[in-house]
Image (cartoon, rainbow, N blue to C red):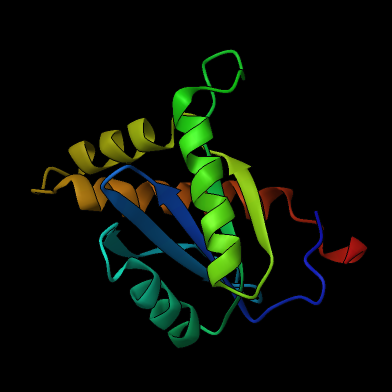
Length: 143
């Protein structure tokens, strides 16, 4: 799945009804890291745009939820509606990545650390896993 032209960095989003976890990675290092958790309120798009500029991001990866057997769900439809709005607000490529079990994996990792955390920490770490999965399947040679 090539990104053409290859951007300096990419941002991944774990979209929820109230919050959006955000992760980033440079395309050179390909090491995703949690960046922020944004509230889906009035200032959401402005704050996302600020993060895109600050990170020199040239593409957005959105985690796409599916049911346990890969079927679309109500949350899939809500995320697809979010992506439609996002495409109207930002001028850059937007890709989707299966987000199966990323939130559960994030919560398990945070539990294992033994330090306090909140829902926002789970969302940002889940976005990191979404980006990690996307980059694992990314083929630089075919771009």
